[in-house]
Image: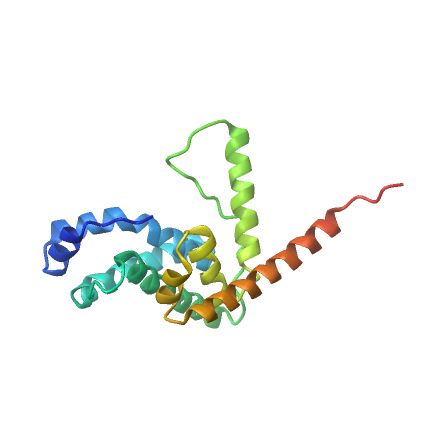
Length: 192
């Protein structure tokens, strides 16, 4: 979970650039991760990350500490990522593909080529499954199931009520289960 010391937040909000750089170092990975999962490609995730931190820089002074900073940051990130996704979709006149053969390297992990390949396959499967969901459902799944936020935090981050989050998650999970079941059936080898 994202943890930024309150002192760092207050200093950054007051215009301390070193504190803002520390804030960026502590939270940019989380922002990128959420943006990548919403948008499906590294270039858009980088664009979203940049836009988010411009917004954070401008609006950090309005953060009221009534909620966790991570919840506020996720809300800014999800809203920005969805806006970028929609903008790209309008520009292309169609839905954006999440299956562009994106390579995701995790600098923290090293290991055998087999583990790296398995990780890439897993990430590719997750991205293709998320791609079938509408933006709001996808964002709920990312925040709750991938990032591990509590239902209440997801509701706050999404700017909606708890029942809406539960409903979106139920519909998203049902859609994912249906799609996953279809994929398994298609790959089944008939027994003779």
